[in-house]
Image (cartoon, rainbow, N blue to C red; front, side):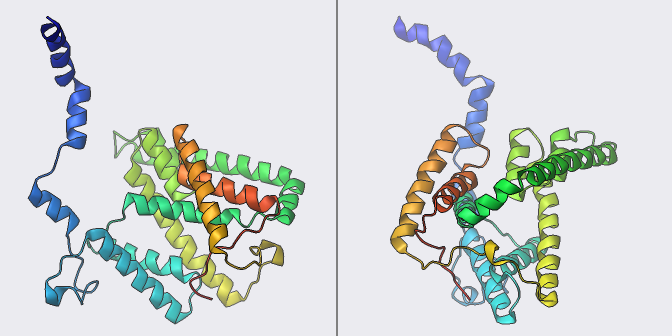
Length: 289
């Protein structure tokens, strides 16, 4: 009787829309499809050493190697921010050329956490005091950026709605909002917008800004104030390990509360808290001078 009583409930669940969505999300791929996804080869330019031996390379690993070679080229050319410009230009060019570039989501999250922790280490007590004195200017800048992002989103919506009837306001708003590319993309996806369009818009903005501004500052020989430099302390592996552990706990807490970008915000909060309290545990290791 118990089995017969549960049968209608099981049929209702397995035939409902949630079960079909579950199957589409977790349905196993065929072996051929799995191999095609995991062992795509980049063009000959990206893997000259692998092709002669017919060695398959995972798509993400080939992209990572290509980005590393781009960084090394910028280091050789003595360009500003080589570890950002090199991978950005090389991977963007390869993607536009049709190469099967791919970034592992977990590696992207670790990158966001690294950036957040690195930025947090700049919030020294002197910097926090300066922020406290200029709170009104920071507030005005926030209001201005929100207003400009909203107006830009409205303009993009009116400009493209006729050509794209399915265009959502969330897509245009987050495409025009002044914020980080990854954060705006994640927020747009949560609000039902086209994440790929938002990512493309912000990627183009980041590409233009990072290519023009650093070169202009390098050629103009502009130097920042000493206050903006990170703490002049040596790298300590144990201090870095402690920061990583605290960042992991902060990320886990924010994920539990469904934060939009817990990997960045969690590590940023830890870096700000530790540095603002005058604690100098470590610095982020530098790969180049």
